Image (cartoon, rainbow, N blue to C red; front, side):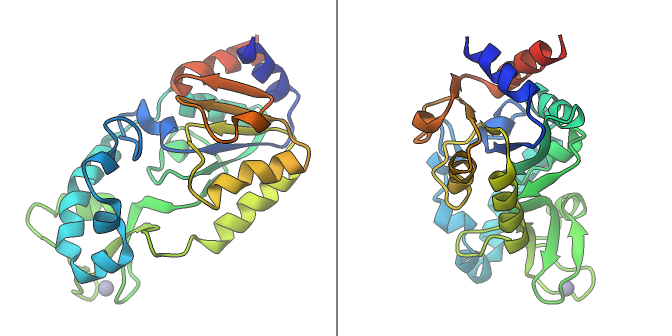
Length: 247
Ligand SMILES: [Zn+2]
């Protein structure tokens, strides 16, 4: 059984690394981008999520972001997030590398979270650099569009997420590669692994000799490199794996 095999690999791991994507948060009510009913089936991503369109028209960006922000800020960690935090707490995972910007790993108690695409929990003024919490900005979007910087009055407040056309945070990417190189198990959760460089991280671990476990709703291009592939919901499968390890 693949769940048993995954539990066996993780139970002996001491430097395990998880890589998570949108699927890990789907059961928290945050829509995935590419899947069925995904965000990018209703919006053109380059139009709503590129730095060029943001700079040209921050109002349009914030009108879409207002709805997304309301959902993301209200979301709670699911059983999959909780199980990953427990695996870290038990010493089987050393870090969670994530493509998500929702902050739900931190909210579940995970200690070391590497955010490859930044965080949606904060907003930065592109004119003066002041950082505010997204919740504070969210609270005034009904009366202020676009939101203005409390410090300088500027109108270019941007969530600290990586938009299309922006570089990934170098520190996070370097840390993720280092962790992957040293990993003794690589656990991929809820990502279709099509976005580079995130997609390369599991391969780095595999080349360094780590067994790969893939938990995702659908097949991924890297299933063939994996020791264990489980298709299903991470919010159900991860707690099963955890219970086998804890038993
Ligand atoms: Zn400012």
